[in-house]
Image 1 (cartoon, helix red, strand yellow):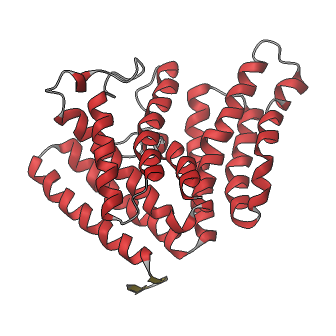
Image 2: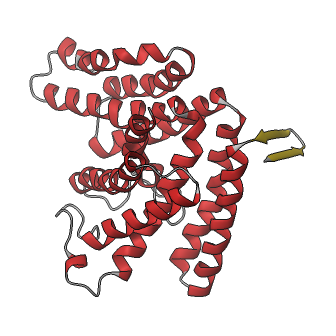
Image 3: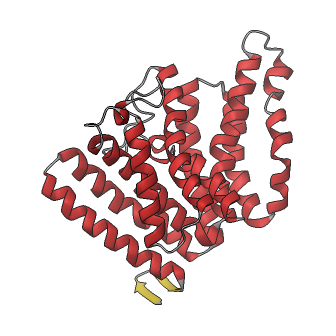
Amino acid sequence: MRLDVDIWFVHLHITGRGVFFFWVTLSILAVAGIAVFASRKRELVTKWVTWVLILPVVGIPIWIGKGPTAVLCAVLALIAVREYVRLVQLPRADTAILYVLAVAYPLAAWLRPGLLHLVPLIVLLCALPSVLTGDLEHGIWRAAFTGFGSIWICWSLASMVLIWRDAFLVCFAAAATDVAAWCGGKGFRRFGWARRPLSPLSPNKTVGGLAGAVIGAFIVLTLLGTITPGLLLAVAFGGVLGDLLESMFKRQAGVKDAGEWLPGFGGLLDRIDSLLLVLPLAAVALA
């Protein structure tokens, strides 16, 4: 299959699986759009419109090549780090480290993937600001949150570059599974087992939602022709656990959303929280 687009400064010439994923994505969004507008629920309409706008922002860099994908990951990481440091209230020195790693990790994944073997060492070096300033009161807390943020956000997003050929597939499958989890939570709530919360962190994340995520991941990956046990587990369980992980930070910070600039979703971290666990798990499954 081949797709050629020449509009102003945009010149896309894509062949193979990327074109297949493109048409499947548009088809699923179109079908979902009919259902969303038929429901007449403003919240769902807002989310759907936001997804339509996000699709080219994420899809085009991935389709163009590995370099633009690395730039996309760096931009996403910078925005996500900004929201993360607000949640955990990190000082400037620790924040600066995360900003540097937000750019360095995706670029390393593109140009020198072998450098990512140094990630465990860099996590330990995240304690340097606390050590050098002799911060006995908050030093361990700062080092822990900085090190965790470097892995959870910067390194995880860099995984998108490592799995570049399958990056759009994984991103779209994770997004579709999020929707399936929401539908499962609503659709299965008539059953007692489905209403059981997965964690006290988020009563809205239920066993029914997890069942919906598994079913949704299975259907989407099957439609995309890439279903494997490892990828199914990565997309379904990684997405749900990633959502719960961010809920823990928001509960600690006492906020509902990490931001307010994405209509229907909150902040960028609210939108990519599932992806932050799905990407590294998918990288293992696809290896």
